[in-house]
Amino acid sequence: MDFQQWWLLVFAGVFALGWITARVDLRALLSESRTLPRSYFEGLNFLLSEQPDRAIDAFIEVVKLDPETIELHFALGSLFRRRGETERAIRMHQNLLNRPDLPEDQRLHALFELGLDYLKAGLLDRAEETFRQLQGSLYGIDAQRHLLEIFEIEKEWRQAIEIATALQQAGTGSNQARIAQFHCEIAQTAINESRLDDAKRALTDALAANRQNVRALLQQGDIAVQEHRDDDAIVSWKRIEQQNAPYVSLVGDRLMDAFSRLGRGDEGLKLLRSWLDANPSIDLLETVVRAMTAAHGVEAANDVARQELHRSPSLLALAQYLDTRGQLALPTQEDRGDLDVVRNLLHHHTRRLGRYVCTQCGFKARQFYWQCPGCSHWETYPPRRTEELEAQK
Ligand SMILES: [Zn+2]
Image (cartoon, rainbow, N blue to C red):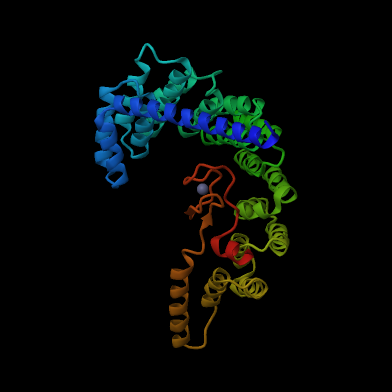
């Protein structure tokens, strides 16, 4: 036998092997398909003809007839949850968990899915209890992430700190900024309830967790004001400028009030104007214009507004300028009327430009938030109004 004949034999052998394998597969498939209930194919048909509701009914029939179809249980369960039919999802996963023969990994999977169902249904206590059972398992880390979500919704900040720390130790990335915010939340509750010593301790913890946290400095100032230590409040708020300058726009009004109470209004105004020069911002401009009007009259305030309008032109700055301009004497009654029309039009238009906006989900709000009410992310609101942010792009 020469070389070429050898090759022919090898080729024929490989072909025969392939043919046998294909037949065996085909047989297995045919015997499997014979064991599948009719409803399964009906379900598939409905899915293909885009009738999802009828498909679901057919698949439920399969699950009833053939309880072995574990994967189908999971698929239907998460489908129900996504469609907001949480009761059906819960029942589907509980049925799975009630099966004594369910392998351990599938049991954990079903438990995790059940936790998600409870969370979606807003049954937070049950969700918490379910996720707690998964601690230390294959689903432990994901369960902890959801526990953190639950504690944030429930405003259980101490438990949130515990879980966020544990997650961080498990190597899921830094949670320090978030932990600092949790301490700030604890401090805010204490400030509201006039437990100032508790608040101070919480803020020390916040700054220990994240030295860059601006909110803690802001709150330290608020506490100092409550304790009639305006000087200390000013020191805390000045530190914001060194830490993260754009955020000074959030404390302009409080800073000016503290200076005024100390009888040092001019000093306060000078500081605010230097901040405004370094960090143009509508919020700061409003504060400066208000303080300027009180200290030196409308004309001086109007000068500031005009300068600012020329330096960083925007509709919000224009509205601010026209507000002070309108308070100055105008030559005729008609002029005043014209100005009022322009101002009203402008105010109507700038209302939507003067919002804070979340960089994560785009949720807009009139008020500044440390945690977005839309997507629950922390520190996603820049201290700037919509129009200012658009101008920066
Ligand atoms: Zn958001």
